[in-house]
Amino acid sequence: MVSSRAIGYLLALSLSCTMLAGCDMVSLRPSGYVAAQQGQLVVISTLLMLIIIVPVIALTLVFAWRYRESNTKAPYTPEWDHSIQLELLIWAAPLLIIIALGALTWIGTHTLDPYRSLTRIDSSRPLSIEAEPLNIEVVALDWKWLFIYPDHGIAVVNELAAPVDIPIHFKITASSVMNSFFIPALAGQIYAMPSMATTLHAIINRPGEYVGFSANYSGAGFSDMRFKFLGVNAGGFDRWLQKAKASKDELTREAYLELEKPSEREAVRRYGAVAPDLFDAIVNRCVDQGKVCLREMMAMDAHRPSGRASAREPIALNPGLDAVVCRADNSAAGALLPSVYRD
Image: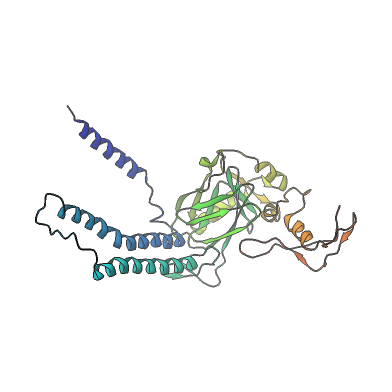
């Protein structure tokens, strides 16, 4: 008959195997240069901390064994309370580790700034100055992802593709609540927020099919808010583009408003044409042409006279002044405004 202790050991072993089988170490062996550098930061930081943790654990076991009650040969010094050498060792080692971690974090934070354009394809190949990035506009919807390729005039729902070794410039926003755009094999997560455009520069170095998802809870359909990211060669990317362009569906403003409605487990959907400046209208929350864009409202507030004015009094605007809406990268979306009236 199997003892209860043996059953406990078997259950623990089974649980460990199950957890290990379910672990995906993609963050530590990614296929994108940015994610690879982030993975190195994690490994180096962990090793630096283990320099302290491992000796502490080992010494804890050594002290517990040596100074156990039954060991009468261990020295007994109840009056001992201080050692300068020991104090220096205890405080110097962690201090050096903290300094090293601080320097590593400071350098990595600036080097891997998502708003910073890439300068290398990978650790051994610099990026040509003439290399043009692939521009992709990302919109987090409830509960699906919309990817717009403004330079190619197409859009795809829940599928993303990019050629290998070509820099990618993402502009990211959300339709309603805050979300998070995350492809572990490509780069770290970047928040997607309504009325704001965030930026991510990344590059994929190996072909393959990767998983992207939302890393920020956003409601009922959050768990199924996933998409495929395809890293392909130049020929494969051209074929992918042609497949999207062959679609007869057009992502007009009206079609976007319909797509924006909450839905779950959406299949891949392609649009062969996209309304001009749709992403800018999404950021400024004026896809519905009957609404005033945020940049216009901000411009009106900025030029509103301090005193109260009579109804229908015109607000004098400089006709050469661009109305702007601030973005996370300090850029501005501009549009000339005519004179407007306040109700």
